[in-house]
Image 1: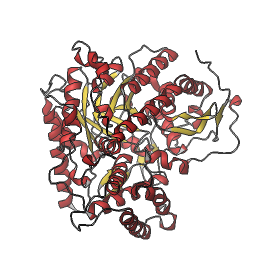
Image 2: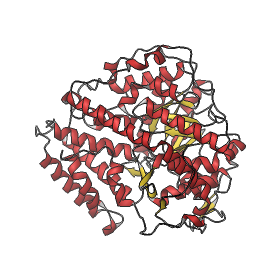
Image 3: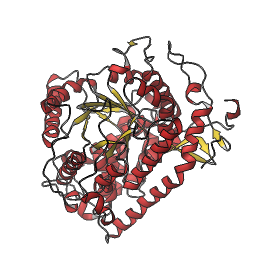
Image 4: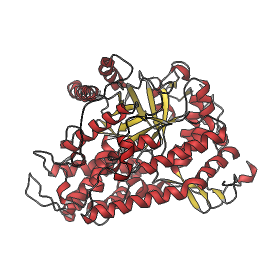
Length: 554
């Protein structure tokens, strides 16, 4: 057993002891208590070695894929799990029976209030892809959730008063998404290495709020991102068991929905549910990250080049196969199959364009309902009524009883052929535009960015980056000009976009487009390929002090 201790633990930020959101008196000091830090440090020391090994395993798979001698397939060693019809996930947890409309967003205080007041059933509050992981964003996200769970999140700004429409007990159920296994938190070091961001985010929220959540009739519920193997899910399950034991909570109280947003995970859906079965509340179609992962893992294979991102839709063969397999798998195992994100936001100054966008959302949600999903995601409260209107047609609070009769092969999951698919100059410009705008905002501390009437997060920026890398690598011919996509071409258009965006930036000379371009350029010219943009950029937003905080005084 790992000793519970803060020896050789360095917190490289000051602990703020002043409340930021009156009338609440909660401070960072209420979150970073000695007991809470001991808990997250214990998790890190117990499980970080396994985390790092599992990340190495991902690269082993990538090298095998790059060689061309290896193809993704269902694992022969886990065939017994897939072939056994008797096992099921856990019974549906309180507050998670009806998940017909889930809203998502970062744990920023005003967004938290707006999301909890929205006409939705659940709210995925996000420390991951819609949050730029600055220290203040992450730690005040914990403060905000601590207050929300205790009905003390109301606050005022000079322009507006934010107030919950009732008690948290009666509002949408909170589900928290921590950062993925690949991320670290460089403001807290344990034994001379940064703590796992996943364990930091999960641990602080769980330690402070788990018992309180049970008290209000809900529970500690989580979304788990970016996993690529069922053993990564087992790692989470082991963390859940240790955590529940540590605070004296029955095992199985925690519930977790896994985002199937990587290509390798699509071949291990049943195994992932099985590893988490005591804690499982289903799987989710993380569509944008899934496209990103598909390009990333198959990027060196010329037979898997995707066209302009607008042509990669949920009806594309590989996307359709993934969705159908997910719904069939979840419902056979008695857990939720959640749909993907409607990223549209209201277009206030153009009623015609707005109606067109909302019609697109409605059609997307109807497709999800018809396929068999139990609910879906929206990025903005204004979209919730559309999702509600569609999913009320289930007639029940979910449709887990509906098991679509589908057979999806390994080949179906990698069938990236898109009839009539084209790569165009406009596709390059669009990818550069989205990538640059998102990265620039992220570097300034915002991870949830409205771009072209869509709410973009890290996943869509990743699609942009990976597509450009892939097109350059394989020298794709543009359908509109007949020109080959070369490093010189992408670099030229990048500079044009940087100049244009910098000139029109609402923050003037304080913009960070030049810095964003510095990191973006090698990625889109084929010079290098980073696993994640967020890890590539992370050091730019780390704000540590030279002398660690004295933890003996906590």
